[in-house]
Length: 441
Image (cartoon, rainbow, N blue to C red):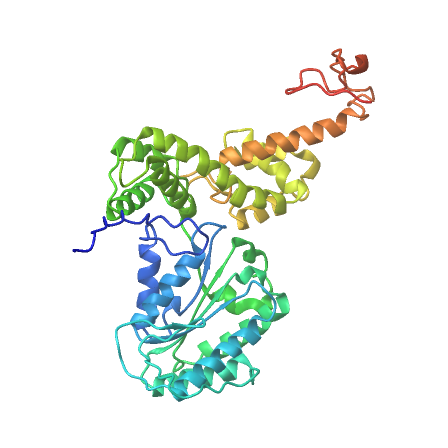
């Protein structure tokens, strides 16, 4: 009796909305990837041999590092990859070097096309034999400059192209560790014959630290702010991923999805994933109904995972500045800010600069004839999210003021005084307030 044939499963959903997970395809990053590829093929004098990639949360920094490491493996580099999310980044780098050196000693290096990944080590052209028991030192030895310099000499002797060091989450590095890392990298990469390339990834917040003269190495790195993606990028990504997964879609519906995607790659992933699942793709085409449901769900998730945590980290003064943008459709002039926020005029410039560093604010246009006085919300915070959080922030400030502050002439602010059912209490909020009334017990 012939075995019963089972139907083939439908193609997998290729959208991967999780932080740090490489997408099915990358869009809007071609120029930067090309520059980094050229740097790997060039000598130590190339601008991008030391690069710091910056962008707000959900902008694809870790994904960029993944792509750089894949290119490095193809070109024959050995990659030392660490995450700086917790203390001890220097020790982790040393352990990675120590581990890679031990594997080199035990392996049989030869050129091959595939990429090997072991414990954060992308070994590229090196095929390692594990027939013998690996012996590794229990703790790292020496300092980074000595270990990295010696290791790059060794991999060159083994036939590799060089060493790539990648450090993610650099904004979390303790200032002391950051200075140590800067000095060691400067020492190694400054040598013309050293085959070492460095790529770090960080939130834009790190810019506030780079004024420190002790971090001059990082200040001299090629600083690359990940460019916000546009509608064309989003449409190419969403439709390309849907098509590769065997899905069908209404072009007009998906275009409306792309128009709303915003500048962050993570949101594109969310929108595509929700639309795919709401439609029941690939069995059914993705139309307007699925797109509308996807827009609602993705918006809520973006706010919960990206925008609300950012707002929580802003200072009270920074929130007050953002509130002015939220109330003016996302764009105001510096002059307007000065007139509206006279109470903080002495520190307003520093507050705005801090928000610019964090990609919460940005110049309205990069063109030469643009108005340098005009600022808009940056890619780190959407207008809808800013307006939502500003409404809540304003409500809290107003409610606190209703319990007893005096008006500009020393008189009490006028109350709503609407009679409320609970024990015939009256509303204590200001006249003309929005939302429900509030009594004071």
